[in-house]
Image (tube, rainbow, N blue to C red; front, side, top):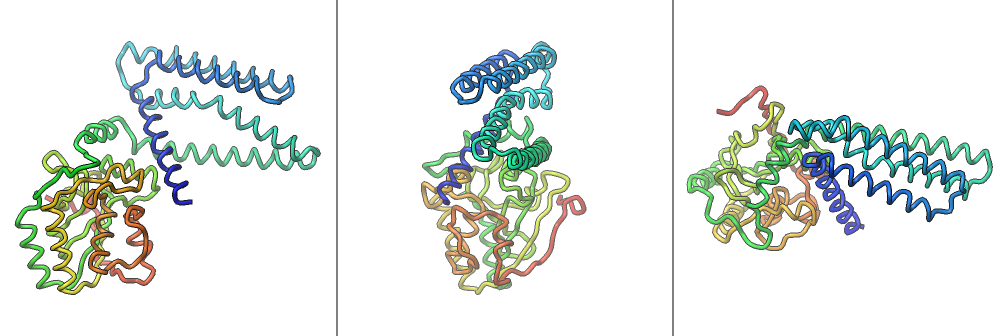
Amino acid sequence: MKLKKTYSFMFLILYIFILFFFIVWSNSDLLVWLYTIVFIFSISYLWKTFNTKRTKRLLLLGYLIIFMIQLTYNAIVIYPLNDSHSLEFTKKAIAVFLIFLPFSLLYINYLYVLQNKFFPSNRDGYVLTFEAIKLLQNKGKSFIHATRETKGKINRANLEQILSDIPKHRYTKYTSYNNLPNTFFEQCELSIEEDNKIYIIVSSTGSPASELISVFTKKEYNHVSISFDKDLKTIISYNGGNHVQQPGLNVEDLQSFYQKEDSNILVYSLQATREQKQKLLNKIRNINSEGSAYNLVGLVTKVSLKPNIMFCSQFVYSMLKEVNLHYFEVPETLVKPTDFIEKDYYKKLHFEYEIKFSEYKPN
């Protein structure tokens, strides 16, 4: 079951990337080819079905009407964009979604065949048809709602940022070595003496990667870090790096969380002994010297190719597990940032505070 869900998630991400590739970089010529290929596939599939001749004629007429709508929209709306070289994200999105319109007819035909094969009586047929229409309406509403939410999160700027960051990542070797500053370790040593807690920071940053992840997780908070002190002078986690840092284990500060107006973080504490905090710090030292890399592929495949190739929630969970402070049981590669809050069944965490960056803007 877990393997099936993993593959489904992989295909979903692949589907989304292909979809937005067409939205951002497609032109009228490419769209004509896609419309034509889908049209030919649809009528070829229709020819092989066991529908009545009357049903086939109706479906063929439907495919022809859709095909004409696609070509007309492409000629009137998309073709002028090629000449002006302007990017109209919404107009292109509609053009790409029109590619999938013929498949809705396939689904309706499937429901029709199901109805007549298994529920031949008029009474049962009406019941199934009503339920089918209701199902289609609900799916349509869900699709429209998801599309509206996705539009604000997945745009050209975010996609270009994500694509530009991909070359920095490595999936079989470490990219970051000895990049943690000495001041970080000095602050951690002070906290070990003065503070008997570890702090877990769950954040909604608004970064391009976070926005993309939220499309799939449907969660607001998509990054998690740990800190040795309550004032968050020692925040550390795995991330994709920035213009200075390499992807992997990096020190973070409040400024890095502030990437949109409604960014915010939730800070929780977890009781820890001096020995546990020292062991945790030693483990971080080892990773820093051995090398690390951000597990971008693992977000999809849920696999780590080397021990120090991780994503943020995988890192935080493995660190807590290293010192026996983990309070829920999940495979490390399946942990999500929100799990640290939602799976706190035994109330081990204590909520400390929230920072809303619309009210508090770090210098």
